[in-house]
Structure formats: structure tokens, C-alpha cells
Length: 371
Image (cartoon, rainbow, N blue to C red; front, side):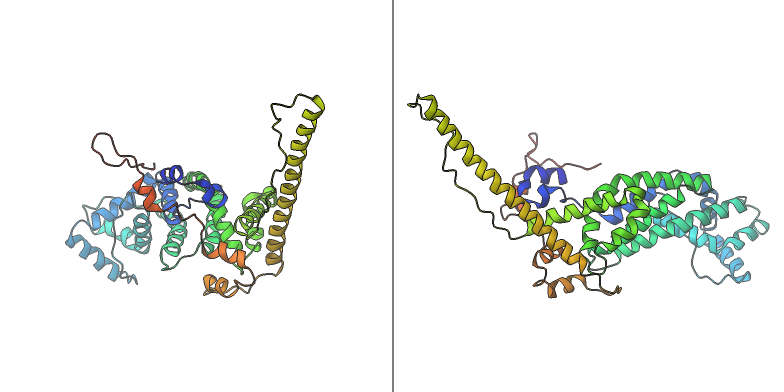
């Protein structure tokens, strides 16, 4: 769909020629990352899954499991739940619940002859390690999905923490956890370059963070290249301010002409016409260069002034859209970036849909699917 939109839209009507048009769903990215990791460790938790299958297989078995839990005085009312292999969060819930009943599982082979799926200390240690890491992603997903009015500035620090955690897990002593983390990190990095830019700019527009959040996280993420990456984001902010700013560019009429009248034959006259046209083009070149410098300089001044004012004291219930609404007079261009998008009126979704190419065979419209 995004490819279809970009083909139909006039990119000159979009911010930075459409380079920031597409922002992937953060929760969906997390799902893809964890799925890649779990695909490598499926066998490692198979015995726990088999045990859960056994004790949830019938009401009588469930009852016997619950009786043993009460006898051992396990302070938990959660029921065992079998996971769905295509939903990683259900695997997390299965493991986290099974870990609570570890002692019950250890006792049951002595009381149920047909229960032959023995669980070893290694199984529980691996389950604990996996569960601890899945809990991090589970919390992040709940954070992303559990808000009625999510704004992009809330995501940057969470995503940075996830990237740093994956880097740490990739060198973990347990080879299975390390392999899982490396697989997850590879998938994470394939999305990072695109999503991090939008999230970073949103974080900068949060008066509690500004550049400080980048300065805090980027050294951990990029190491010696952190200053270069921060500078890239700053330059992108300058470009955004240029595009959003109300700067009137004056055009210069080209009074001269490089076109030489056909009736003119004198080499001197021809040279005068040529120089006249060239110098007029030169004047336009100088004017445009000066305008560009002034424009970029103005953007730098606005940005640096906003940054140099320092950050607000951080609070969890901060209303960023309310803050920008009340500070619009002070930072009008920043306000437009923070709370609106710009696209020409001709580029409506309906006009794009109306312009779809019909399928030659049945007249239906072609659908572009993303992998």
C-alpha cells in the first residue's frame, strides 16, 4: 500500500519529499522481532509445553494439578495456559505461569504414573531466562498498545532500551539465549534505521527531552559514532524547519536572455548577448545561494534557541500536545511540526483510490501486498 501511495502522490507535496511518510507499527515490529528469536529456541521449551498439554488435557487432570498446588500452598490462582506458537505473548504467559508451579510439576511424576514428561533443572533455568527477556518485550507491547492517545515521543526511550538490551543478551553465557538475541537483533536492526529517525525527532520535540535523550542513549547504541549520528538528526531537524517555516523566497526576473537573435551576425554583439544572459543567471545564482544560507541559518537559530532553553522537569502525566498548544506563539514552526502534517489538498486518499488501475480480467483493483 505504501508503494502504491508513493507512486500516486506528488512527493513534492510531502515533507522531505516523502522520506518520512512511512512509520511502521511499533507493536507489530516487536512481534516480528520476538517471533524470529523464538523460532530458534522452540525445542528448548518443548518439554514444558508437553507438560502443560498433559495437565490441561482434561478437567480431571486440571483438578488433580490444582489439588497438588493447594497441598503445596502455592499462592497463585492462575490457570495453566497452552501457548499458540504463532503468538509469542502466549508463549510468555505459558512460561511465566508454569514457572510459578515449578514445585507442583516436580511432585506430579510421583503421583501420576502416566505422566512421563520429566522436567529438569536445565529446562526451568532456560524457561526463566527466556521468560525474563520476553517479559521486557511484553511490557513494551503493553506500553505501546495500552494507551488511547499514543504520541510518538513516548516510544523513543523504550525502543532504545530494547536495542541496548538485545546487544547485552547477544553476548549472554547461555548459547541458546545468545543465539535468540542475535536473531532478534538482526531483525531489529533491519527496522531501526527508518523508525529511529521519526522517533528521535519526536523525542526532540518533547520539551522534557530535546537533544538530551539522544545524548544519553546514542553513545550506548553507536559508540564512537554517536556524535555523527546526533549531527544527522540535527541536520534533519534543520531541514524540517526549513520546509515548515514561513519563508518567502523572492524570485528574480530574468531580464537578460541567452538567446541570440537570428538576425545578429556581429561577433561583438553576440558576445554581449551571451554575457548579458550569463550575468543575469549569475545574479539569480547569487540570490538563491544567499537565500539558502539565510534560510538554513534561520532554521539553525530557531532550533538552537529551542534546545538552549533547557528541558522541563520530567513528569509521567505530561500532556505534550497541550504544551505545544499553549506555546505556539513562542515556537510557531515547531508547533506545526509537533501537531500537524502538511500535504497539498489535491493529494487526498479518495483521489488515489479513484485512480487505481483495474484488473484487466475481472475489473477489480489490484492489491499490493507487503511481505
